Image 1 (spheres, rainbow, N blue to C red):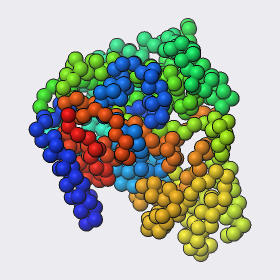
Image 2: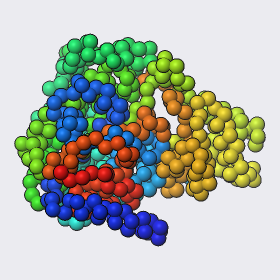
Image 3: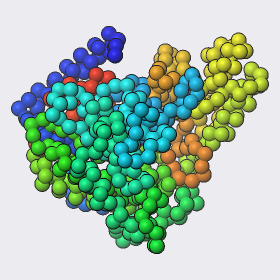
Image 4: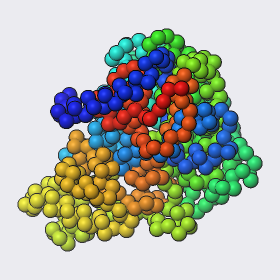
Length: 547
């Protein structure tokens, strides 16, 4: 891969900054294990809103005895799962990783593309369907794990998630990803990584750990009065089921099957399974047991599923965070025993935050609403037809943008930028629209002083370009449904996430208020591991000091 002179110079400058921080840590040994915990869809506000209800040694371990950053954000605009997970250990935004969304369209053929799909690889022991995620083929840059294993092949990089993209993208090209199979309640890797599972994985799956939750109820952890600060149950904008606890998983008289196993994704039980599988990985792979440091990534997917259905303001989301907090407390105690408190560094963050449901925001007097993708596409084509004549001028949504009908534009002898500019003006006139920019503007940087431009530029990749990229106003939601909530905007509810670190041998505890980015995690861990940062990294080491 070739890089420009400017990029190489930027890398040299970044290395200088890294070395400055490293000088403070030269007398310290490398951690034997780095544990990166990713809570899918956890906004920073939730961690702090319920701080008084946390267990003594779960999230509070970071807040009371670790370093945590009160103003940590993603720098890109389209804040979705794949884009965030790709950033974590590359230190790069989607403009460099090529992971511009969970899915997108091929800009030439218009064919749908899934971020971690690869038809040359298949799940081990499980059926592989179209658009299932099986490899990091689309990830265009190296991860910290790739750097670490390139330096010492004895180092191991294991990534685990309830979602394929949550495991594959942090694992990089040379790690190993394991994902939860909603059809069986097991964890599986793909043929990209290996021909067959190691024995410890086979043993874990043979024990059918998910079955213990069959006919088990998710019940609230605290008395009802403890949830008074959250939105009451059974709101009209909640997904079917109403978000009211307790919730029973499994149907009496039925054996555990795909419907039951997939239902666990919207519960704390899938996170309990992921952490149990992480325990098995630590033992089975002997992580943190020798002088070659290892990386373990555990992406906890349940919170995202809950928030999509009921929003982060709901009582069920409130309880889910508390349940997860207790699961983390137990996991940390096991890490202390198996790896040793003085031998590992733990980092907790999220792949994105979450916007409040528009109905909740409207109840607070905010300008809020839902914008239908079908309605917007119809308005756009109606306006373009008035200007340029009959035809479907806007074809598809792709990640956070639109693809125009380039064949129709060429057939009518039109300048593509002229059509794109007309489409941009139509987008800006749509309800709830905050900003829109054309492919040419994003590539050239010609509107760099305008709102959200730099964030949107970081979500634009020249390898998988869109013709127009847009962003809605705060509190507005883009989606076809009338219930639930989502993420994907450049606004603080979606971009602001926790960055929490614990490692008393390496990190001085305390709150840090200076602005930092999620892109800073990878170069920070590179310093601790004594390796260079990934080449494409845009971040700098976090402002930490040794104890």
